[in-house]
Amino acid sequence: MEAYVNGVLTWKVDRLVEQLGVEGMSKDRVSAICRGLDEQVKLFRTRPLDGAYRYLWLDAKHVKVRDHGRVVSKGLVVAYAVHETGVKGGDRP
Image (cartoon, rainbow, N blue to C red; front, side):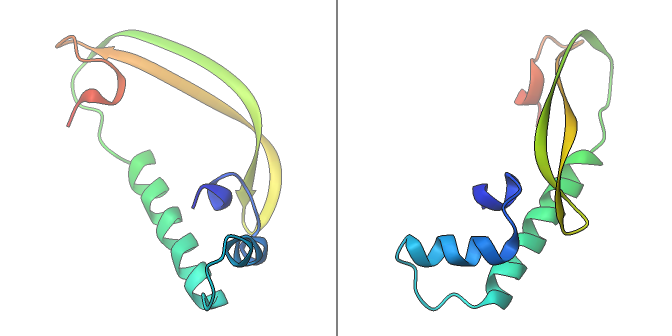
């Protein structure tokens, strides 16, 4: 999963899994895992952010990402916030 998230192409993930000693994983299974990861990322990106955030820190860096089946370099903005209740970042349920 980490290889896919880091922009490794699906067919290369299949090869990597074989090199790790996991035999018999079909390309369809690898694709299904990758689709599941895409869905998790979509849910994370579209989650509601209720309430107010008193502090917000932003940073950015360029990383290689998957975009419509290709690996490209994009700017990644990292945000870290403190909610009005005093809870930091991803600590909220």
